[in-house]
Image 1 (cartoon, rainbow, N blue to C red):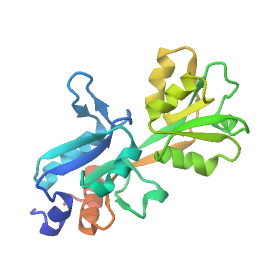
Image 2 (image 1 turned 60 degrees about the vertical axis):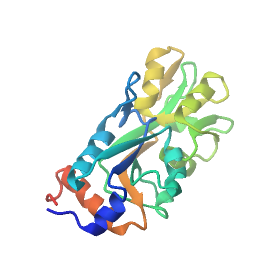
Image 3 (image 1 turned 180 degrees about the vertical axis):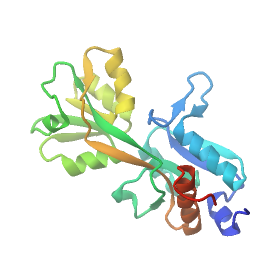
Amino acid sequence: MAIPDSVLAELAPIGTLRAAVNGSNAALVRIDDRTGVPSGPSVDLASALADKVGCPLSIVKYPSAAAILASAERNEWDIALIAADPSRTDRFAFSPPYTFVTATYLVPEMSDAQSVADMDVSGRRIAAARGAAYTKEIERQVKHATIVYVETPSAAVEMLRAGASDAAAGLRQSLEPTALGDPAFRTLPDAFSEIPQTVAVIKDNKAAAAFVAKFVESYLGRGSPQ
C-alpha cells in the first residue's frame, strides 16, 4: 500500500528516515565498540519502520535521552526512540509502548539500603541523569532524599564511585555490568519504575504520529498491517 504524501512529508522529509536512539540505554541499544554500529530492539524497530515507509534508515546516536530532547528543535531526527513521560507530551506525540524497561539504584555493597524505599531518607543523595524519564519518576516519588543531577547515566555511576552520592539511578541493564564487575557495588533487587519505551515524533506532525502509532501496533502483532 502506498504511503500517503502527508505522512512521507512529515516522517522522512529529506528522503531518509532519521531515527534518534539513546546510546546509554543498554537494554535497547548496543553500540559495537569496534565499528560504532548500533543494534538492538530500538534499531530493529526503526529499521522495520523505514522498510515500511520505503526509504533508507539513518541512526542518529545520542549519549542520553536529555541530549535527544535538547536536539528536537535542530531538525536532526524524524523519530526518536525514547521513553514516554507526561512531562514530554507538550512537545512530542508518543506511539504505544513497544517494550518496557525497569529502573533501579546502584549502591555501595556496604550500604544499608535493601530496597528502593530505603533510599528516600533525609540526607541520602541520589545521582540521576538530568532529563531521563526515570529521573522524572524519581522527582515524583522522592520526598526526603536529595537528587543530584548529572548529564549522563555513566556520570551518575562515576559520582557514586567518587563517593559524591549514595546511589546512582539508572536502567537495570545499564547498572548491572558495574555491579557484576565490581564487588564494591550492587543493584537493589526491586525497581522504582517500569518505563514505557515508545517511538516519538514532534507533536505538530499529526499525520506521522498517527501512522507511527498504527505501525507499532502492527509491529507488535496487535493491529492489522497497514
